[in-house]
Length: 466
Image (cartoon, rainbow, N blue to C red; front, top):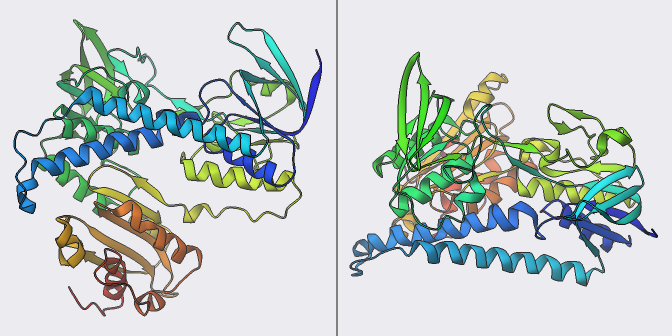
């Protein structure tokens, strides 16, 4: 079997892999990508993009049901659930084709199949029949195979009654009831979607709050909003087992030494992910793993110098934009460019339920734990003219500054457009802008971004509108 030679072979074409491949090609490398499913990986096909399509439909549905608030009569509004699912799949397919176009544009070779490392410089491609269809010789290898849903030990995701996020995106009909296990970003987004569509959702979380990594003040506001919309939320609860009978699920939970049972049509497992590296053959070439993920240095090199790993396969934060940033740096590193490591303390996180949550940096609790003396500014969107005009006045901006340096330590937003507002704060934090500089930066009026200015002013005791 002849071996085609490449400067870089990327295994996986998700937001880490395809970005790494394109950047490597831009820098003059001959690049190949190995992908066993659809181009674009989980994010474009079964994650980030199609879920946001579903969530947008839910937002529109919720708005239409209260159209009279805007002086518009819209009677007997109904949701066509199969059509909503269909549109989500159509957008995902379009995005995948877009990746193929970019590969063609950048002269990147694509090989369908499962990539396996025969040596540190040879990647074999296994087809669906289990046969080796090609062997690629690579100066450098970038592993970007992502992760898959994790389940509670002893509980199998059967894809019918106990489902993962992937099945939740393609159900044939709307269930009457659902238990969502895990209240991280994935669990919260699906809980919001299905509750808004008319399914009775119970959200179960083992930690004391939903979205445990977010600021507690912010998650308390989200919990209140969800409960107002009739969602059931159970925190500090451990799922012990799930029984399936007559196409119904019974979930046994333990909370504060008390036991109870929950029943529903479906249970959605959303407790996290684990890395996809079992079929890669990394142990044969000496790539070291740690706690279920591939171990890398600050430049994404593994224990084998010419083999890199990026994205979910190297552990948290499990975010598409992080994978893309890591992919850029890995591609530039193999091309001889001096790479500046990522500042993981300045990574924005977004949750696309309604109201949305977006944040960057430290929560108030974490900032105190790290010994900072704080000054905190808050501004409610109910005092923001643009929010009132849009009928979206729920939420706040919360900015946390170090009292000594006046630098931004953390920013937390809950609002209908929070995820679009966090970008400004990402720049400010990365550039170490002081609160006084932010206060003196003129923001357009009327805009949602004025709430950021006002929150900074509140931290300095200079607030005008609250």
